[in-house]
Image 1 (cartoon, one colour):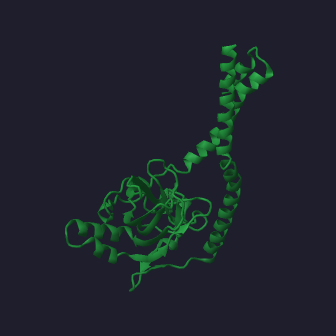
Image 2 (spheres, rainbow, N blue to C red):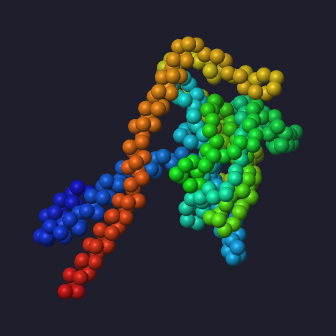
Length: 313
């Protein structure tokens, strides 16, 4: 890119022509790191499915649903190392254009299901051998939260969160309600999709597809134990926060951790806040991408128009 600018600067043209040629290259150079960051934020896979919608004039369209976790790869909470904040994330867009579908009168809810790795494998095996139905498997989840209203994210149409702090295990979500398709049609949905555990993520391979409603493609990662990333293993001391037990009601009870670990939690929260503050300028720069792209396009048009006029002369 710099070599191209040097070459253009050396041509025997007026300063106006040099600027017209060089400006698009400079803008492209400035856009490159911002575009790379934008792409990197969405590098991890999510599960996706398309839903048909019929417009009042009879035309057929499709809505694309994307479900996963924020801030992937998804790892369990570990004081002072990972905060475990991985929200359930839903993205609603038009399938053909990938344009976000504004919230409008959209009303969506989520039922959240959690299984320990051992329980997940047991219920999946039971479903496959016919000794348990999917409905029974959902009833036997290690823990579940039902009827949670999905919250639209301010300033990001089509994006919805269900906030949570996660621990190691298998997570699945049933999303249901209605989607307002640009104010001209309404879609009723009732979908369910679970994460997929892979050995590359530090745990056993668990195929959860039998728990999903039909039609889902791709997957999102289950929550892995942060300690699996430690090298050497002594880098992270054994922490009782991962030692979970299940009481008679089926709810998960985490063992209490020490005063020193509580200090680490406070340190982790402080670090998270600092990271968010550091990311704010980057988000501001990212929001300027459309403006810079428009400037580059306008400059390119001016260059072409000028060359056409010169050729005609």
